[in-house]
Image 1: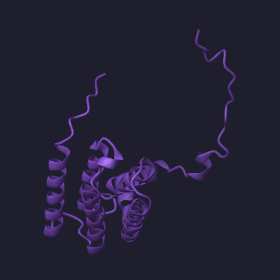
Image 2: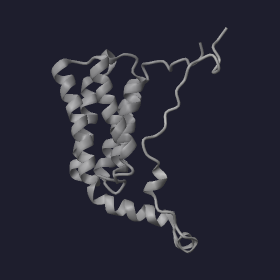
Image 3: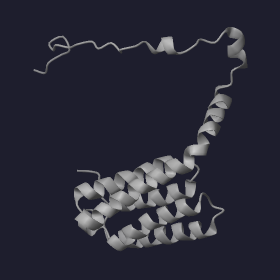
Image 4: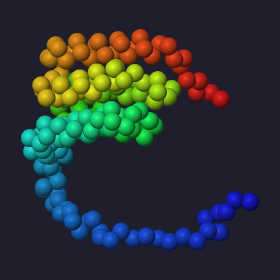
Length: 174
């Protein structure tokens, strides 16, 4: 018979500080004037001057993971680092003002997720993705206005689709 909560020992952990003491409560008058969306946009505006640096750092992490694969070879561990770096870029690119780079990273993640084993991942195509992301960040290819970036994305997506056609879809039932 499975243990129930009553049968198990447990400990209640209280946070070290009450966060309510860190926040000032607005007066009813202030609350009427407060626009949370406007406040968030203003905060984002203040942070936006750092977005390029943050994207550079994410790109450096991707390049480092790629360098590890080049020196140590492709393995579950090195591929996981590369995937994590690409996934971070995919997740942060839109917020950091690089939606086109995010789409390239998303396509790269799809490639890595779909290939059945690390050995099947084509190194040449992998390198093309890494270099495309690096170049697009350096050149500031942020959105659809950058025709070269869009063409590069289209080419990578087409090559990826053709390559992945050789692998049958994973059966999720079973």
